[in-house]
Length: 245
Ligand SMILES: [Zn+2]
Image (cartoon, rainbow, N blue to C red; front, top):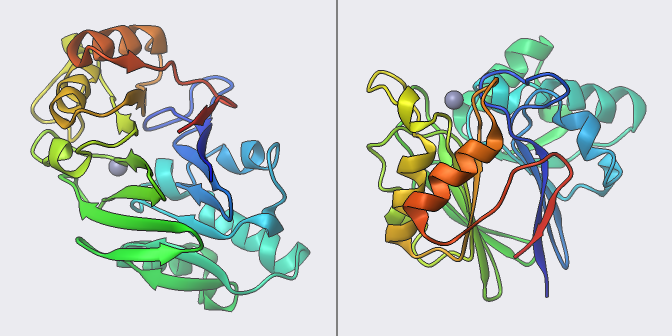
């Protein structure tokens, strides 16, 4: 049994120089999942696996920094890899957006599974639960369990969603931490590293990975603010870093 997460990109909003937006390769003993398809993550994903080895794609929401590689990888499957039936789990708006961008129904390549708040599914050896967060569009956080190991990925959320309840007791929390404390603002639909750290402490998670870092900020500063509020082991996000859970 194993569960791991590899960082494919962790920039929020747009990829900073040499970076990529949100995306993670989540691997268990039996499956390989691409969790969020942010800009720049398709190239990085292929450093680790062949696209035809993907078992499923999960998309938290249709904002471009989490989604924009999906209509691109459609091209790869359709025109180059001759692959159909690729399972994609996502909110309904992601289906509409993918079809609009490609200009046709993507159902010839993607096997769509529309998810919504409270859904719980099994894919290969993993169980995945979804929870709608506080965001400007439907964003579904994911709680991924393989046997006795659990990771939570928030996608995007404002401070109003009960992150701690959803992440309760998780071994690994990949959480959005867009801002530093000095950048917190009630009009921004995101949380800061400090706010993430507080929620991680409340949830009693094992380890914390702050992500969705505002371009121009030093990720190490986000880690130190998150760690101060969390009081537990807090990892530095870096493209290509793989975390065993
Ligand atoms: Zn968003």
